[in-house]
Amino acid sequence: MLYRLIKILARLSLLFFFRRKIVCGRVLQQLKGPAIIAANHPDSLMDAVVIGCTCTQQVHFTIRSDMFNNRLFRFLLNRLNGIPVYRSSEEKEKLRENFGTIEHCKKILQNNGIIIVFAEGQTLHDWNLKPIKSGVSKIVRHAISDASLKDRLVVLPVGLTYSDFEHPGKTIIIQPGENIYPGLINAQLSDGMWKQAFNSILFQKMEPLIPCMRSQKKENIRAWQTVISSFNQPYTCNNLYALHQIGNLIEGSGSADLMSITRQYSRKGRKGFYKTLIYFLLLIVPGIAGIILNGLYYFPISRWAFYKTRNSIFYDALLCGLITVTYPLYMLLAAAILHAAGWLHFLLWVPVLPLSGWCAMYAYTLLREMKNQSNTRAGS
Image (cartoon, rainbow, N blue to C red; front, side):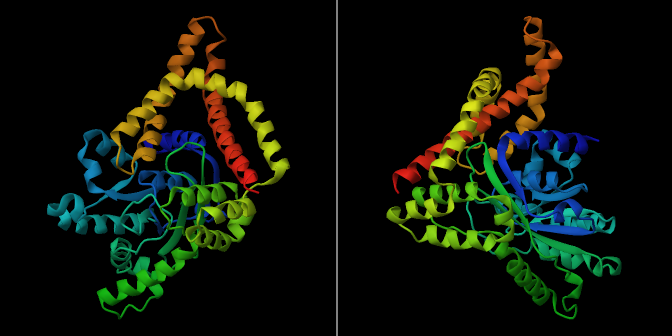
């Protein structure tokens, strides 16, 4: 019951985090267990949220064990199907408990469940696929020792590409790949050789799903973010290879070349700029109202989340979790106060508060887009 409620609230809160959520195909929506989703891991718990909200069937997900040390987090994660994974970097003394985790995953799969496992085994805010760690292969190898799973278990590679890790109104591309049937891999191989073969197949299947851009220069990152935000859905899903090519171009380009690259692949010209300007002008009044109505809630909570997660990769995840859990309470309280003040009926304020907040977020992203378009046109 709690899982379903949180999923509904999380889907609503994601409307404020993502201006565009590009889900390629309906593979995730139609996925049925027993299945393992092997995904990259660029944005901590946010990755599990966006995949879980995309899947129709209830999912389980692996998560670092130290997140369960907090009593409140442990309560929530247990009810949201979190599965602790013990790593030497957090709780070395508990590594043996991973045997229980792997057995627990097997039981979930035997019951036709779906498990999200983050194949890289680490979270970094960047745009490239890291080497595949042993977590997925250990779970899969143990699972297919059961004859009932050997022929049925599916591993689905999924690539996540975010335009941004700091601002609201970002774009995300969710790209499922081709199914892997681990039961078809030679079972006569030793454990080590089998896992190596599986990891090699998984890496080959995941690499095309994650456009790569390794440069850490600010101007290169801004150009890359502009390109990701500007791609339309059919083109992105049908030709993800183009993003790989652009990423390679941006990675190796200096400041003089970046302007021409972004001008070539992003929305350009007077028509595109004025279209964005019209949308912005239509949203500016409700957007200002959204800032006034929601600012007392959003700015303190986002600042607190930033303070608590500084020098870490958990800002998005913490802020999304806080908004999911606390914003409905704020909305009801604010609606009651505004109703008591004699301004509109309570039932009218309930939709006005989140809708105006969404307008504020969207207007902000349009303002950033116009800035990028202006910079692109100035360089032409």
